[in-house]
Each structure stands twice: as structure tokens, then as C-alpha cells.
Amino acid sequence: MTPVQAVIAKELRGYFVSPIVYVVGAVFLLIFGLLSYLYVGFAGAQAIQMMQMQGGLAQINLNDLVFRNLFASMRIVLVIILPILTMRLFAEERKLRTFEFLMTSPIRINEIVVGKFVSAFLVYLALVGLTILVPTVLMLFSDFDWNPIWTGYVGMVLLGALFISVGLFASALTENQIVAAFVSFGLLLTIWLIAGLGSLFGDTTAGRVISYVSYMEHYERLVRGLIDTSDLIYFGSGLALMLFLTHRVVESTSWK
Amino acid sequence: MIDVQNITKRYGHHTAIDGVTFSVAKGEVLAFLGPNGAGKTTTMRILTCFMPATEGTVRVAGFDCTEQPLEVKRRIGYLPETPPVYQELTVTEYLIFVGRLRGITGQKLSSAIDQSVERLELGSVRHRLIGNLSRGYRQRVGLAQALLHDPPVLILDEPTVGLDPKQIIEIRELIKSLAGSHSVILSTHILPEATAVCQRVVIINKGRIVAEDTPAQLSARLRQSEKVSITLKTCPADCEMKLRAIPGILNVLPGQAGGSFLIECELGHDLRDDIARVAVLSQWGLLELRTLSMTLEDVFLQLTRHEDHLSEPAEATVGMVAAERTDA
Image (cartoon, one colour):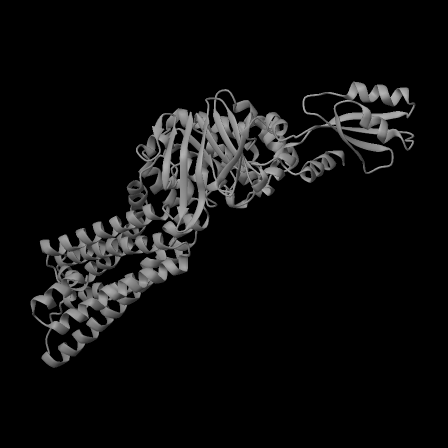
């Protein structure tokens, strides 16, 4: 087992011993289930309405009515719960003075950062994996196209990875977990709102550049079923940037 | 094994350590003594590559701390001030994690864990969560962690804090047993600990090294005169006069109890024989006669409190304070 794997194993153990994973997981799955139920309910109501108006069997599109809305709604859920998942990663080490131990162990800072990121990401992947139950059950009763659902999941995984890296960065800044959660919450909302700023500028170069910075349009395209290289590059480079910044913050704590 | 050259650490305008130079040979145990805030922990953090020095170089086992920190870290076992334990892990899980971080795996890891659990008598708690253990056990888990990979260099920041007296003795024995094969630096402000365990003492105050020597030589060096305490059954008025008449005696002072005197003699002269002869011939009834040596505690107080006087001969009062302390 390499040092990185040791860090991952230890962090996962920490997650499952503390109540965080259970609480975050329960809330995440409950909201995902509730939202699916509501959107399916709305789609049903709309189908009945269309049947009454057209008098025949209405063709309703579950991809449009359920899944696209569902994935769009998950953004705000992730903004709220992922900071809770990531807040302890570095803040707790510093509070409990194990940070010094970690930094004096023969392991590189990037290995620590990657190990911690991967552990939170694995927990998140497991939670996202459980939600596949929803389309699987719906498949029994209805026909829909799986492709945009897969791209939606790709979007949710990439968005989650980006959010986790932002949370990791915030956690490295402080030894207070609440502050860490709040900072990452604030950062994520700010990046969200940058999309609004971009749309103010309209279809100018400035507007396009500003909008590109926000994760909104990139995520939306994936939810609509479009896989665009520029979006993948956006998530990849955003993730790399946040991990790099985390590395710098962790490194600089020992300069003080 | 450890070679520290002229390191300085500044935090903004505050200088935490200032031009510290010392070295530790292989197998030597060195105590780092100093009052709180003297720069002990800062020095240790620099040695363990936790933070870089503002100036100066540190080499551990031939590797430079700034150029090859990983090689240095591999060769050091470090126990920080607060034992670095994860409360959500059991003792065994924690040691497995520590071992893996240091690249020990498989059979080697489990035998290393068994060995350090046995050494620190953690057998009864190995499967308990560290969060539920007492301070003393956590301290021992922290030590087990530092010893796990059998490093050639051990850096222990106040290793006996939080332990009960029996455990303190056991840990000191353990550290003594490490001497010879390991280089150990331990910081402490418990002075008997330094005398009991270490071959050499470095006294640090306000970020500077104020003294460095063996405990015995330190106290000898700071002594301005030999001091002898005597207690007499009867002491006629002329006894002080008679004592002063012995050649080589500098001063005679009445002690705390009636009939006791503190006699200062010239350095390097043992006048006990002469004093005894005078006392017996004069029939004073000699009850007690002993030399007073400065304990490390006195040396420490003198060095850290009266740092300014170090260059000049220390005031007589300081010496007296020292003598009275041992007397009491």
C-alpha cells in the first residue's frame, strides 16, 4: 500500500466513523428521491392534462420533464452539502495537531492533497451511484433515452469533483470546520453568480469569458446531453487549479 | 548525525531563534532545556522539516533539510508537543496508518507494530479507539508512533508530559536504552529528567543557546567557589573566627539553622579535611560536613534569569541562592 492509498484509507475510515457521511448521505438521497417523486408527479399531471386536451394517448418526454429538471436542481443541493463533506479534511488535522505529524511524515504534499481529495470524491461517487436506482425504477414503467441521463451523471460527477476541490481548498485555509464549510459555500455561490454577471454583458466577448468562468453553462450543456470538449476542459482545469491552490496553502502554513 | 549550523527563525519582526548552532553525534542523547517560549519547539520543527529556517542550514543523517526533506523525514521519529493521534482510529489502525505512510508494509509492518506496542505496554488498549484513551496512553501511542520505523534520529518534544511517575521512569529507561543506537534530542523543562537521561544539555533562552555541556560540567563551570556546609553542636563566639583563619577559606556565613555555617573556599581546593580537624580539635561537636554542588536546576535558573550577568562574574547573591536551595 502506497502512502497515498494509506491516506485515502484513513480518510474513508474517518468518514464512516464520524456521523458526517451518514447525515450527508441521508440528506442527499432523501432530497434526490423527493425531487424525483415531485418531477414524476408533475410529469404525470401534465400527461393527464394533455390526454384531456388531445383526447388520445399523450407522448410525454421524461428526459425533458423529469431528468433535466432533476439534474438542474441538484446543483443547489451539491452547493449546500458538499462543503459539509469536505470541511473536516484539513481543518480537523490542524485543530487536532495531527497536521504537524502529517507534514513531518515522508509523504509529499501533493500526495496528501490527492489522498484527501480522492477519499471525499469516492464517498460522493458512492452516493451518486445509489441515485441510479431512480432512473432504473422508472425504466420499468416508461420509455426514455438513457444517453442524456448518462451525460447528466457525467456532469454531476464533474461538478461534484470541482465542488470537492473548492471545499478542500477552503478547509486548508482554516482550523475551524464551520469557517471552512462557510468559505466553500460562499465561493461556490459566488462562482454560480458569475454566470449572472456574464449574462448581463450578453453575447459580447467579455460576457462569454465571464460566463465561461462559472460552472453553470458547462453543467447545463452536459445535462442537456451535449458532451463538449471545452466543458470537459473547464472542469479538468478548474479541478487542477483548486488542487494546486490547496497545495500552495498547505505548503505555506508551515512558513508562518 | 544532526548538524545545525547557525539557524535563525523570524516571524515578522519577532525572532524566535537566533543563530543556534549545535550538533548531535550518533547514539547521543541531548536535552534541550529552556523556559516556555525559549524556542525549543521552533528548533524541533525546523529539524523535522516542518518549517524552514529563515537562515542557516540543518543536516540530519547527511541530508539537508531544505534540499532533501523526504530523506530527512524518513530518518526521523518525531513526537510533537501534542501527541499526533487520530481519535477515530484504534491504536493498531493508527500504527498501521503511520507505518504505511513511512512505506513499511506486510509482515515487516505487523512485527514493527507488535514491537512498539510491547515496548510502550500498549497491549491492553491496542484495539480501543484512541479517542477513548487517557492522556498518558495517548502520549505513549505518540511515542510508539515515533519509534515505529526504528529511526536513527528521534526528536521528542516533552516526552514525559502527562504520564504518571511510574510511567515517567519507564519512558526515561526506554530513552536511555535507545542511546548508543539512536541519536535522541528531547526537550524538557523538567530538570532532573535531563540529568537522568542525557549525556549533554543545551540550555536555550530567548532563542539563543546560553550553555552547552554535560550536566556535571555545567554546574562545575558556573560555580565560583567550592561550598561546604557544616553543622556544629556547640558554637562558641570565636568559631567563625577560627574557621576564617584556615588558609584557603574565602568566607564564612551563618546558615539557616543554629550552629550551621556555609563556608566558601577557593575553587579547586577541598578543605573539608582542614575544617574537620579544626572542629574536632576545638571540640565543637561536628555533626555534619558536606560539600554543596549546584544542581542543574540552579544552573538553569542562573543562566536563564541572569543571562545579562553571564559575561561578568555572577553576583555572590546568586551563588548564595543556589547554595541555600541545595541546603534546604
